[in-house]
Image (tube, rainbow, N blue to C red; front, side, top):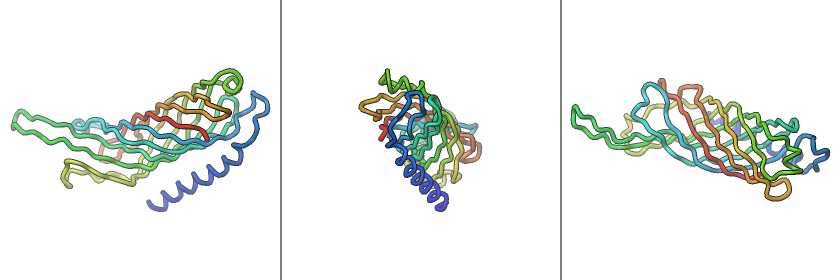
Length: 217
């Protein structure tokens, strides 16, 4: 899996390098595609396990941060490549079992993932964003593959920690808006939802709501 992580990192570095060359182009016709841009974001992820065996587990919050390159294709559509670190997992709440009068202590599992995503981005026509308005709504949708790089726990013994699979495939969708602050620079606000398409352990999958704030470079 180390080779996969290096490959994903190299892919992003090459993408960012290529995008930087295009990002300094001056826009021509206002109806033309926007030049490629770079950006970064950070925020919080609210994750939980889904599946028939996951009932005792509740949601868990963790950090979410990453960078992206956005390649304009038309005035309306662009291709966005993301690479991020996402904290997933779940929290086991206190459970009182009446039959045996037993209190189960709370604990949680944190899963740290490096995620590479390919997203289609749909904007309000960029010509209007450049010429008339400071706020540009957007919709995002695509797929992501995540590599597990960290597993930690609290309040659980070693035997209670499942052996999670190394990779996860998910459907990513959401939206938000960009608020232009000066020139082509904008503050970004995103809400995304990662729907797990593959099981990470037995019949468990992972679903994650992501709240992100960032800036274009």
